[in-house]
Image (tube, rainbow, N blue to C red; front, side):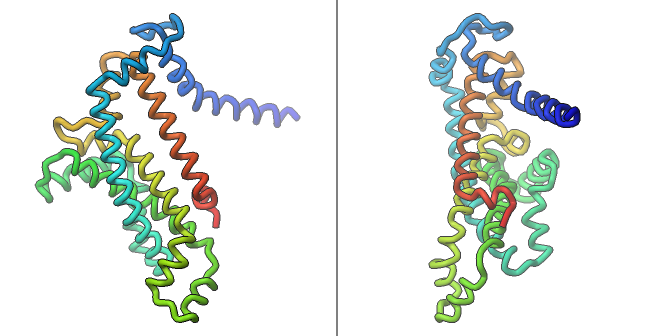
Length: 258
């Protein structure tokens, strides 16, 4: 009995450590104080200020554009990579696809920065951010798709071949409809990772291009105002919504089952 009490206490302490700061951010986004040093009163006005901040809206537009394009490309390439990993089981291919997932973000960001500047002679900007986000998102999509494929009954594909279906017909009529929820979940994950990313974006953004995480960072260097809390709250809600949708589309794939 005493052991169970200690386990529950430790679990509650860990969850409080993880989620209490998030709740404080949400609460102080409604604080009627510009300095945000203490609670003064409840107000909605910081959300109004947020939606009239042209720099913030421009940064949010950049983030949405980059996340949309990079998640679409990462979903396409990650789906193909997941299928190839499942079908051919080549260790080198698995290593190549999974390396960006396991690599520390700061190392990946520096590596992409050097690659873009020294080898490609590419001017850093929106395009470089998109390419960087596609690079680290492919592996996450491939994981979800591969896990989904591992849970399928191979007799379905054997039956399709026995009926004379070509590889393309088998993929179009059987494989793709079955893995479509996992593909959608992987795409939502890629979108979430892209719109939230700071470290890799920081190294590959260049001058004059700002995303929402970069703009928030530039604001908190001066002070953590209720406007920062408001945009952080909205970004948090968007991220949680996308994660819930991804879990609905492919619960087994996201749990690593199958």
